[in-house]
Length: 579
View 1 (cartoon, helix red, strand yellow):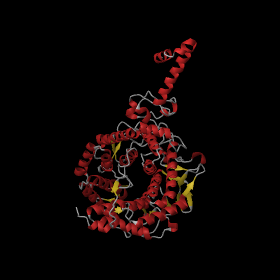
View 2 (tube, one colour):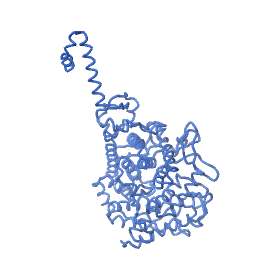
View 3 (cartoon, one colour):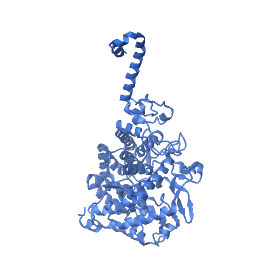
View 4 (cartoon, rainbow, N blue to C red):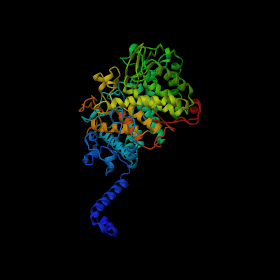
């Protein structure tokens, strides 16, 4: 006001009509305030930010409901934390775009780096809880602070969480923790001491895949030696008339068997069909062809077997080489087989044309027979049981949105077909999250009831066990489209994890995603560290952190390098020196 008074006082003409002076003073003040507002706030954010965060909000960021009750402010928040912590869009059903002004705000405040570092804190919390209470065991019970003994790896202390998480630690730059894990692997990882049976599939994707990934990142051959030792214990499972491995191997006895619940002693497509990347890479880095020979025999049988309507059934008898029950799914029992067909083509620098042909034919058949659009406009894959279609989708099946995006950007003629499908399927999976009270997705969701689309109708399917498939698709869609909505969906997911899954020692699954106060299941799955947190970290990272034109992620999110020399597998093997 002093500036206005001096400014007006110098205008001698105004003293003739002194009555105008108060009016002009007010106009001058309003003009200054308006100009200052425009300079400081060039656009209207209209975001429901709350400026009085409690100190513990940064530590736990569990103020998930802040969006709903906070006043809508029409000026920029004064602190970076106020902008970056709050989900700014896509957190309600049907929201599939992020307004441009909100995207600009996130960029201005460098929120993606801020959020990336918060994911690092989550990894530290999960790892340190495991290290304190279950070091050397397979998984942590983060409520009771005990070791989880009920996993597929049983009671044998095989350090599952260590091996599965090592490449995540390395990628995040947590080198002190990585070095401690490496030392444990060197000194203690020994499958000869295992008692009981182990899953061939789970051991391959978690142990062999995890060890080979760390080798690829560090060039430390100790990890190759360990991976080969583990693989050798699995080889008896392949001793069947067809070469199709059985599901379980008894390490101490050197025998194998299939799951007791599998019909007619069948092996499972998603298990024996998801060994290719790990066994092939192991042959390349060791120079030992036996691992590649085992998976090549599987590939050969699947390529030439009769496939009714070009569909792959989920069950195959390893003795007769004949299909079992006519059950087809891109979720449980089928999922990662299709993933590895495309990724075998990609990791070979698009030289594995057999895998690509098998993938193209399989996807065409699945899209023709199993793709549907609900009454509410949601695109999904059903399950085919003989001629009956079960209109439900597994959380596990949500990986396929990311797979289609990866396909679309790697083959020009496929882009127009597969990229829209990638977006539609990923949107459906996102809806399964935001339609729950926790913003976490159920294990399975149905489309049978138009009033409850993308929701679980069975209590057992209402659980969330820290699975990664949805955020995996967010990651691929972000990298391939650069649409910021996928980053915002991922942040909404991270906030929900913190609110509903975090414990004093780690993170636990929950038993009902539709309960605002859900009971925890007291298990910190190893894949939470290997996959879920890795994809969250990468979606907020620059593209040159594990770039998709140089690396391919396995089913367990372990990155393997693309082989650019286009040499055949046999030539690659011949060029290696045996370790």
